[in-house]
Length: 452
Image (cartoon, rainbow, N blue to C red; front, side, top):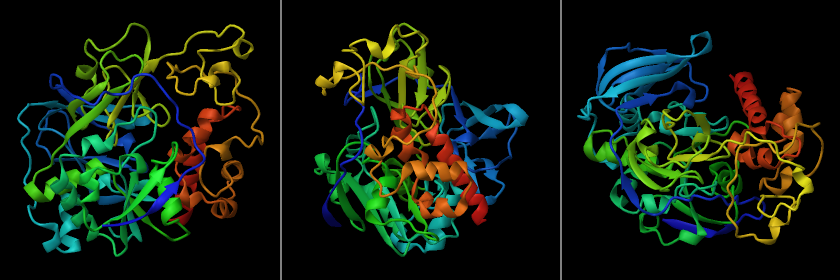
């Protein structure tokens, strides 16, 4: 382990919401239904290789990527394929599995990663279906196993609203985390960068690990975003490839090599103002959220979000946790008219621009809903985005270059470094109510297509 000085993030915004998960583990009844959802995987064209009624075990391939047939997506539980849900133009939305409760798993390689070759480690991770946990910048898509990244990043903390506290979740998995790092070390000739929150620098699971370079970050959201960390530690230029992995997935990779089996257990931070018992719920990857919500919701019409309120996906009350998510957020739907709007003092309203007197109480937590808080307006130069995006780029000009599909300008303005989540705060504070994240994704898809 080596460490660097503290990297202080000055620009950003912490959105204080009600309903943070308490630091306790809650056991609920096990779900009957699970789903693997192809839309969770950006850029993947799924080829389904199962049908309703098929019996599967944990690790049984359900589909693969047509562009990369070697990348498999496997069953999170054992049981029977219940249905394959499709949307418009027969787009596959989910492969739903009825669990048999036995957790039968296919056997994979059990070995010390330090004694294996790069090819053997790649093969084990790919065959088990765990390769999708490794993603890359630029484009924020699943990594190409044939690439040699210049570095691998792990963000050991999350600063998004009501996010899980990973220092709490990883503390009992020192050995598994180390084995995961040992495997990842074989996949790059560069460094493995582990970014930590300066406020939680006492987490032994992180600090005792070998084979990483540790960096401490201090500051508001988006300090926990891996894209911000890459920008400040090892910036991406044209032609560069950087991989990134979540801390819980590092542990899963470690368990794969320690046991030869896939561990799809999951701890979900169930949070939000409309939850009666916010906490950490023991569940499984791809599980139905119904047991997490049973007798746990306040009255009213609610929005269910797999992930956080800035970047998460809207799901139904009987929907499923996304592949990359360890958080379920529930907030009120905002289907009402706000009488006089900004003309009122707004002591209970959240405001970034100090439009309301609530800014006088910076520690207050808010019960925010899904109201847009104003109508869509012309897209104008305001200087707002620069206040919450701690990157040395010009966000508004990059967005305009994407809208104009100007490839050269997009390159010059830093398209290779960014991702939708890095611009989530820009969208949140945007006075024009522009769908900034959708524009960034359009630009990334355009660049990827251009570079192929």
